[in-house]
Amino acid sequence: MPLQELSASLHNCQRCKLAKLGRTQVVFGTGNPTASIMFVGEAPGSNEDQKGEPFVGAAGKLLDKLLESAGLSRAQVYIANVIKCRPPNNRDPEPDEVETCKPFLLQQIEMIQPKLVCTLGNWATQTILGKKVPITKVKASAIKLERFVVFPLLHPAAALHQGNLLETLHEDFKKLRAYLDRMDAPVTQAIPAAAAAPTPSPATQPQLDLFGS
Ligand code: URA
Image (cartoon, rainbow, N blue to C red; front, side, top):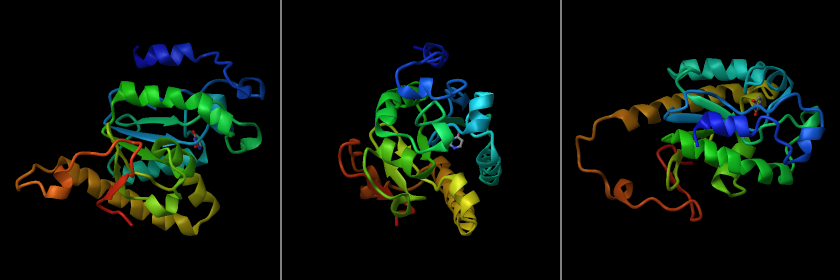
C-alpha cells in the first residue's frame, strides 16, 4: 500500500480514545516519502493538531534549525510521530494509545524504507527500540536494528524547557552529521570485523557503535 493510502485510511481513525478527546485531525507525517532519514517525535501538540503537520510549533522551529545545522532540510527527510493524534492538555501518550498507533508508525517506516531513523526523545526511542532505555544512555549513538539504524536524539521540546540541554542537542546534531558523512564515505579499506558482523534483530540487545556512550 502506498504511503498516501495508509494516510487516507487513518484520516478519520477512531481506534483509540484520542479520537474523542478533542483532536482536530490525525497528524500522519510529512516529508519525502522515499527519504533515507526519518525523524520520529512523540505526539502532535496544539499547533500540529491545528495544521495537520508534525513539528510546526516552537519545537518544530528548533528542529528546523537543528536540521539546517546538520545540512538537512525538511523536504529531504520524513517526519512523523509515535502517535498521530494530540493527547488532551499535551499529556504524555498512554500505553494503550501507543500500542494502538505503533503499528502505523512501523508501516510508515516499512513503506519509506529509511536507512536511518532519528528518534526524538524517550517515547520515540523506547517505542522503536522496544526497550525501556533512558535517552541519556543512548543519545547520539548509532544502534543497528535489522532493517535500519536508530540514532536517538533529545527531544527539541526538552531543550526548550531546559536551556542547558540546547548545547547538547546542537552537539548531538553535529555527531549526526559526522555519522552521515561516514555512512556516505566510500569504503577504501577492509571493513573491520565488528562492522561486518551480522546485524542483530530488534528483539536482541541493540548494538551501539560510533558515538556509543
Ligand atoms: N512534539 C512532538 O513530539 N511532535 C510534534 O509533532 C510536535 C511536538
